Length: 78
Image (cartoon, rainbow, N blue to C red; front, top):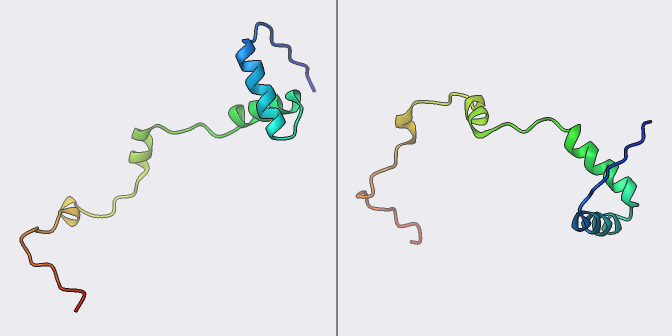
């Protein structure tokens, strides 16, 4: 396993790391490992265009048109 040294970290970030590590019951070093792994080893997020392009074709646009508001609503309480 390699060692990593990061210099010049903002004091606010260090305090936030301490708080987060304490909340999770871990050392700062262990918390940093978790953060790095979750960000760098997770699958990349897709943008909206990619998500929309991946949606299956489920019908024609007419299938999703609004019903006429002029039709009388059924009385469901009687």
